[in-house]
Image (cartoon, rainbow, N blue to C red; front, side, top):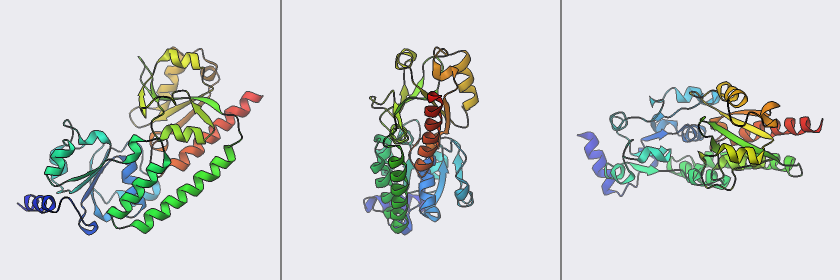
Length: 291
């Protein structure tokens, strides 16, 4: 009864949920980590979709919030928390998961799909952080995080600005065809800032299906391996070196691999660390090529 009344009030207010009344659920690791970093944990009633270990500095806050599922929660798990705000991966607001946006809003749940999921610009990440800051009444913290990230990114940009860019293939997984880092999301931008040139930069997807022939023709100098819990980097490298159609490429034979956790090449608080990992790895390969 309480949940129905709460939903009705929210609907009548046009989903204008005040910060002190937010009961949020975050269904992507990057949105969860943003919200914890800016101090919104008291208004988070649930999390889901943790692909890598949570940032150590956020672990204590994270463990106080119910983790509904390692992947997408069920509708029952979700509505049991009486939430009125949902954010995370776009796929969460589909029929097979928690329902489409219209259904969620009808049930009193405001849905915010981060802009950064549809963009390769760091500005979209900053806009998302600011939105969360305003929504959860921690705007000062959000603005401080944005300024910190901007300064750190600028430092790395300046360090790499005159260096020769190396061609990069970002490998997420799969064997019949490669699942790759495309040009439509933050990962592409992080590669560029780090001193690389993504061979799939012209594509509109963030992660998507590639072709082994395209990779052979492009002959990348660097291969970035995306690492997460159910697809280890060791297995991916073993496949590329011993059984893949690109095992003859110099980058593969010379072990020009950079391993990076998924949440470090995706949007979120780890973008600077992600750029640093990529930049350091590209530098080492660049220097090795000179020898």
